[in-house]
Length: 114
Length: 112
Image 1 (spheres, rainbow over the protein chains, first blue to last red):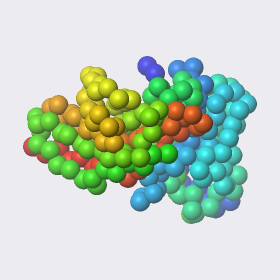
Image 2: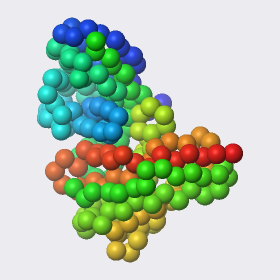
Image 3: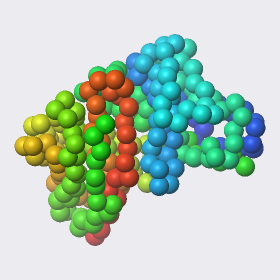
C-alpha cells in the first residue's frame, strides 16, 4: 500500500531536548516536505527536498533541520525545541516538482514542548 | 500565488450533493486548481485537480468557470464520512510548484 509513515504519532518533550521525527515513503517519490499546522494559521511549509541531498527552506524553517540521505526518508530534526514549536506536523511526498502531481501526506505527529 | 476564498463552513444532509465553492479571481493562465480535504486532524487527502476543463473522479467532480475565477467541488452523494475541512488550492506552475499553500478551508458538516 502506498503510504507516508511518520513516527512518533504523539510526543511530549521538554524545552531544549533534541528530537527527531521520522518520515518514510514507499512510493519512490522525489519530492518530500514538512508542514506544521497551528490553529488559525493553517498548514505552513517548513522545509522541502527535491531529491537526495537537495533540501531547501520553506516558509517557517527557523528552529528546524532536515536531511535527505536516502530517497525514502526525510527526518525532521529539532535541535533545541521550544514551546512555540508545539504543533501538529505533517510530512508529504509527491513525484516531483511538476504541477500535475498529487501529494500524499502522513498521519501527523502531535508534538508538545513543555 | 493566487489567493483563494472559501466560505468558512457549510452543512449538507447525508445523501445529498455537497457543492463547495471557491473563489480564485487572481488565478493566472497556467495555474491549476487543487482540492484537498482533512478529516479531523489526519493528514490532508488529495481529492481532485483541474486546469480549465471540468474533471470527475471516483470521489468528486470539479467544475471550473469559463473565466477560471471560481470553481465548485461537488460530492455527489455526501456521507457522514465526508465531514471534513476542504481546501481549495491554486498551485503555481513554476518555481516551487509542489508547495501547497493551504488557506483556512471550508468545514463541511454532513448530517443525518
